[in-house]
Amino acid sequence: QEQLGHEIPPDVALARGDLIFWKGHVALIVDDAQLIHANGHSMSVAYEDTATCIARVTLQGGGPVTHRRRL
Image 1 (cartoon, rainbow, N blue to C red):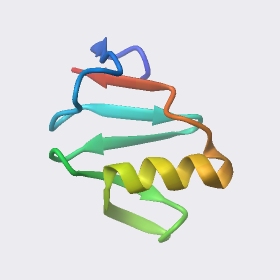
Image 2: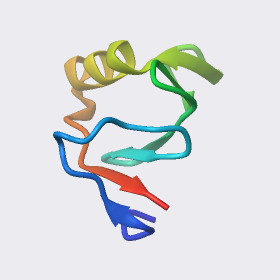
Image 3: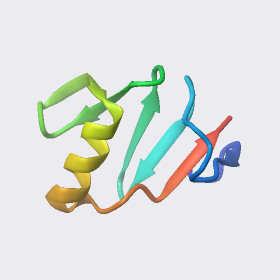
């Protein structure tokens, strides 16, 4: 899955439909502020603020985002 589409450089803003990956996890970008993902934090599929989610996953040991992909 991490090879789908093409890599998005860090200086390019994420857009609707982009995928972001962590070790063992993936989220779909919904718009310029939100993503949707299944997560253990809320034990559900949830919409979440993108920056908040990335920071929380990183701090809780999930590591940094490993790939940013655009289909």
